[in-house]
Image 1 (cartoon, each protein chain N blue to C red):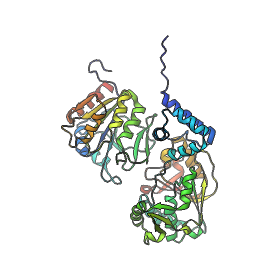
Image 2: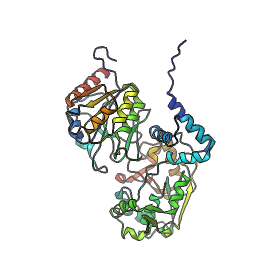
Image 3: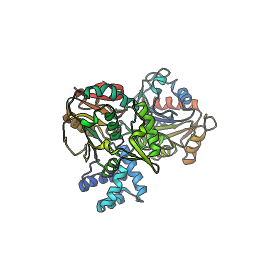
Image 4: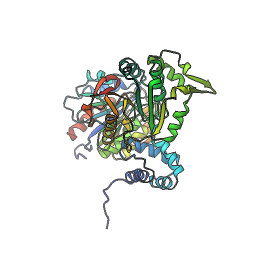
Amino acid sequence: MNSETGLPSIEAIVIGASAGGVEALLTILAPLREGFGLPIIVVLHLPDERRSHLAEVFARRVSLPVLEAHDKTPVEPGTLYFAAPGYHLSVEKDRSFSLSLEDRVHYSRPAIDFLFDSAADAYGSSLAAVLLTGANRDGAHGLAQVKHRGGLTIIQDPDEAQVATMPLAALDFHQPDHILPIHGIGRLLVELERIAC
Amino acid sequence: MERNYSGERNSEIELRLLIEAIYLKYSYDFRDYSGASIKRRVSHALSQFECNTISALQEKVLHDPTAFMQLLQLLTIPVSEMFRDPSHFLAIRREVVPLLKTYPSIKIWIAGCSTGEEVYSMAILLREEGLLDRTIIYATDINPRSLDKAKQGIFSMENVRAYTSNYQQAGGQRSFADYYTAAYGYAIFDKSLCENVTFADHSLATDSVFSETQLISCRNVLIYFNKKLQDRAFGLFHESLCHRGFLVLGSKETPDFSAFGNQFEPLVKQERIYRKS
């Protein structure tokens, strides 16, 4: 814990988003400066799971290196990762990625719950998890797991989210450390990085 | 005196013990499976078996082989479809089949065939290319119930409707309905597709190579293995394949980062089609 800010020292950031998520993510991620030192791992639901070019789209707008998370590759600091469409994404204890084809969760594969839950196991209290706009209930359970393991939890203010269902579902489940508008989330991530790196 | 126990959490210890007990008692080796997925499946099993702890589940399956067989169904993932990733099968048709045709007889190994969807897809493709009669297919899996289902070749009509569009996109030359008889919501696949298929129990974690093959298909199996077990599997494939034999994988799998990275070269990289170099 940083005595000046009351914020923990974290090693990784996970973000879950669904409907309205592309815009929300760009608002948070585009201002991050080159050299941002923490890994950011994102599950974003898309209507067509099989073909997506998220990594390419974000690479043009974000100054961090952007990659699709590949099976059994290590989580590298300062890199923005997207889950591959059609596969669940997990983080293993050795901080490498693994993919799987288990059933959909809340009609979704990749599922935010699986990423959050596995990252909570891998990183414990040195994880920050952010849940953004969306039209289903994915992520609520996973976010509670992050909190249970001592991690930092952040939910986008439902009043401001493009679709409030997902933030509201998560708020039903547990009380997060922060409920913030989108710009506030961006500022918090910058602050977390400053403390950690 | 208060002692600070800083070791692993109980559930992690219990999970390791369960996996070890299964290996010692039943010889199914999940020790080098990816941890996150195994943990989720065991958590799911806890609710199915109405056990409060993994230790309670362990006691149950250790003393009751029937309960273990039920648990095995939950630990293996029978999620499959026919002609999954149609472009993959189209690439096999266009790039691999012309080379396979140069062999007088062909042996194909479908490793981790689950309930048979990949087997029927391959058999249909080979029949349309005039190769099925001179091909022997070994279809292997660790789950005997999945193998039984694969042998039966009965799939729900609802799924088969989705497979039909895959089949067409994969370059299918006929009507998909030519390959099955529909009855009571099920599609019963043409038995002659499996005349030269041997279904067999085989584990990539514990068993060895059983035949020389020209093509191995192992799709969406390796993602459930850790690096060490992936290396073992690639080693078996390398040993089994003939000179310049083909290895085809799932859409997110690659030998590139394995110990056998330079022993396979991509033929159609995008479609995960490799050749022994």
